[in-house]
Structure formats: structure tokens, C-alpha cells
Image 1 (tube, rainbow, N blue to C red):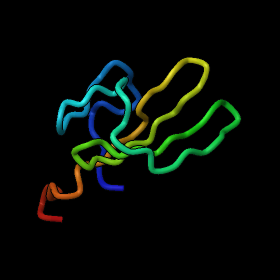
Image 2 (cartoon, rainbow, N blue to C red; image 1 turned 45 degrees about the horizontal axis):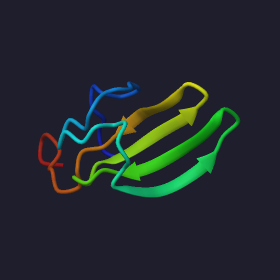
Image 3 (cartoon, rainbow, N blue to C red; image 1 turned 45 degrees about the vertical axis):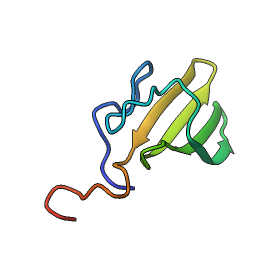
Image 4 (spheres, helix red, strand yellow; image 1 turned 180 degrees about the vertical axis):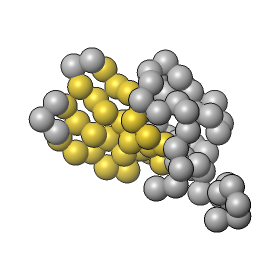
Length: 77
């Protein structure tokens, strides 16, 4: 995964790339995995950003997210 943003591990936020609310349905669920505490869900936002979401008894929070695939990394990488 490419770099993450400052919205990591929060709820009630939105994608910094396109503004899609984190609490809304994800554009695409890539995979879902059961964990001891609940589940980990990998999703893709409509802008292409890949997100890792933790779902447990406290709700859902985005743990990490990448830049959209077509956005070049700082420094041209």
C-alpha cells in the first residue's frame, strides 16, 4: 500500500482525496476477514483509494488508506 493520510484510525471523517464520508457504504468491498475482535474489511473508495477498516463492538474505523492509484507519490514515485 502507498502512504497513508492524517485521517488514519478515526471515525466520522471523509476521504481526503474525494470527500466520500467514511461512514457511508464503501464503493467496493475487496475482502473481509474475521478477527478475534470483529473483522477487518479492505475496501476501495470511488476515487480508487484502498482502505483498511476495523469493525468491532465499537463500530467501524478506517485504520489506513492509500492515495488513489492514479495520483503520483511525492517525489515522482
